[in-house]
Length: 217
Image (cartoon, rainbow, N blue to C red):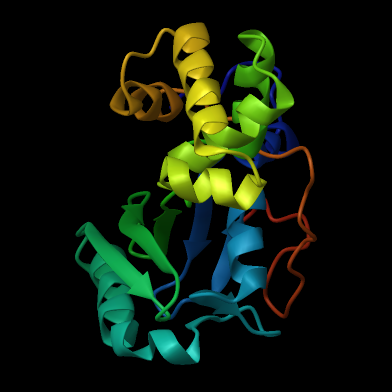
């Protein structure tokens, strides 16, 4: 990719920060070199991926069965230039991860984290504003996209099922979606929009404080 004139390294780092997909750059051993905002949130949550105070990415205790696959994927990406997809789970949460080679040198692996939901909260809020959804309708839409049944959402919100179905009908009419599948496709097609709240930086031995320039492990 050709760097546009006038953009410096810090501005490229800001582009990564605005992505709603977690982006990690690490060495073959899992030594962290870069993590954008979404990835930092995942690592700081510690489920199933986490990072210790030396900057080493590791798997949570309940996700250890996938440790060999994780290590093999990093090795394959950095040394054999192979791409792999992994399903990392700690028993309660599952995270889809792709591990790919980065650049022309066998040094870094690019780790892309799957989304936890079809669309980020901020994007759904703006979608609701764009199509004049009420606050209640926005919350119902979030529940539907999370896979909840109408009855469960109604119970959670303390309203009658008939009321909830009426809200669902209003959502479909405003968004021009005839079926739930249409709502899911609409959400999946929303442009990337990361939260305005930034997770704290991960400062550790060998990890750059500005999270912009990979360093050797």
